[in-house]
Image 1: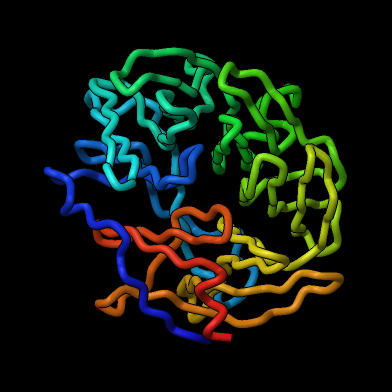
Image 2: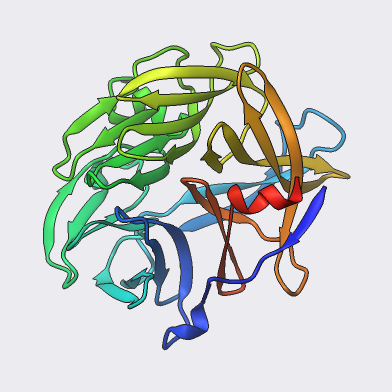
Length: 325
């Protein structure tokens, strides 16, 4: 295990007020996008319940049950920061929705997304200008795990098992486990391959032509599989043991977050894998800040993982890890 100290690439002290971090991602041009709320974010109702899914002595006795709230207790204001030489701020004000994703998909098109399982809140994606003018609204499905975009202004969306198996009819937007939408809400790609997706844990939109997926599937012996989609076709599927929410990729190397339990405590570390005909574990890592605190990943795209801790954003690329091998 290699411990690596990372320096922040962004500090929220650079913005003029205290904001609540919601999510970071990359826009269509590769710039970092960070979504903030102005007041305490109350999107989740939580309670502690017995962990009936416990499978070993190391697993915790209890787990946190979470229920998503679509509407905040009071109207919310959002800031979407587009990091660059001249950081841009796009504001979405007086909203009665708990947004979970915000990203720039074109020069003057900004996308705001929220989770929904309610038929009365079906259009869960809004595209606006930087002044807040609504250009389009449409549904991208329930049970969203992740959303990523590319230079073609597309939206690749991965889904949880809740979205895939929601409701009496399986003919829902999310039933495939993975979709790609254009900026008008048309589906330009729908996963229809083997193995079937029971949950799409993570995606990495590497380019306009290539997307990587990590899925949970009862169709494979190992339960988990890594897939490469090129030119809208499945080019490669590899069974593996890694259930990961975050996946960075560069030249047949994959950096994944691995979660396991030790003495009933959740431990997150990161494994660098080499993928050819076989999977080879090259090294394992923990990433910490200058105060020695472990960093937890919030986003992965291209060859890079991103972390948020104590108002600061950090990153590490696969290429930067070469010197530790």
